[in-house]
Image 1 (tube, helix red, strand yellow):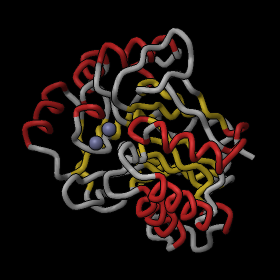
Image 2 (cartoon, rainbow, N blue to C red):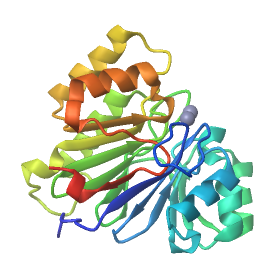
Image 3 (cartoon, protein in one colour):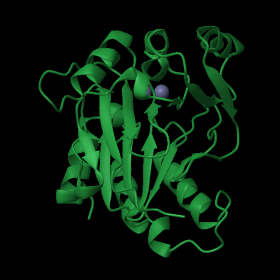
Length: 259
Ligand SMILES: [Zn+2]
Ligand SMILES: [Zn+2]
């Protein structure tokens, strides 16, 4: 078993924050994870034409994707799915079991295979779902295991960002998902937490509590984007310094970026 994912890249193809010139921004989130056993599209943003346009500008071929993971049902994460499937229906879509039957049926009509996610599960070597968490809005997050630690990617983090990070660490540490009896300690560290943290309307005090929790959990890098809000982004930047990842449409994160 290897955790050395030196070729892994995460490319943000849909976000309401801008990063690279030429890419369009719109409310929502989507990123593509390449260089592992499967090529994964995590969420699809709110707008299919922006998603596909930004993928093209980021040199990500829709046909290179074999797996789609949808965090939760909100339109700013699922809105681009139909346009994507029109280009490449030959994918397996991991979606929370709680998704409406109509939504699942439509994806299948395109020809996609669907996997309904309830508990945590392994998607492929070194990529896991937390399983659907939360009460009102069920949401799954993605965990990428690397030799530098875990990368946790969230859509909107409706169940709570700290709860999600704890869950991700517990899953890997407790060996629920892994056949190997011993996992090196470093591999169970949450190295990077990125995505929507759902802090747009949070007070400074609440955001600082979350930052303290991240520090206690030994999160090394934080990349709040999408629904994290500008206030939280500034505070995370202040507290994480050079380990703050400025995420927007067109941002690429490589393993070489992580120490
Ligand atoms: Zn969202
Ligand atoms: Zn949402």
